[in-house]
Length: 247
Image 1 (cartoon, helix red, strand yellow):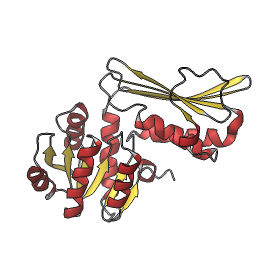
Image 2 (image 1 turned 30 degrees about the vertical axis):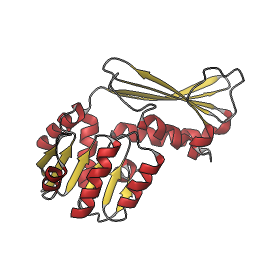
Image 3 (image 1 turned 90 degrees about the vertical axis):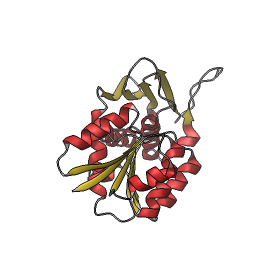
Image 4 (image 1 turned 180 degrees about the vertical axis):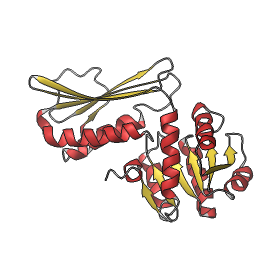
């Protein structure tokens, strides 16, 4: 029996995760952690778990990882919005515990990442890339972690670094598009759960790779699958493509 603790249980995603954990056989929900939990409460909650599933905020996630390290507990991280320095801290924690860290736990999104990688390699710099994403009006980070992952995947497939080619704002730009650049467009409105499209626009044609989420359940199901993946892992940093065997 896989013993799971879930953080962020006061939010929409936390509620969905709890439902998923209760529905999947072989999983026992042993603890829930809300933003009002003290460090002592978190320490007690995690001491009985095999894996923590966390979809909260960067600062809270890093605090939970420190406690996971103390107890040797694995972690599944679906939180987004980390800085480069915070991502380095996660890599450091992964030297002591096993972690699945992915901006999107959806199986479909991770298949989309594979498709984007293949398309970017085949099409090369002759095709312009634009990443479009839309989320609900309460989402804090922008562009989304998934949009950035799609852009990073495309850039790496073309031998680029996203930081060198990303265009996040075109306001005031009065020059032609820079060859090899990757543009991002963001919508925050209503209750959109999550839509992502990568456009490859070339001479006389356009390819669109699109994923649309109609339910947060797909993220929760992926997170539970990631928790199962970690059960025989002691240390290391993994992502959903490792979990799904797509590497």
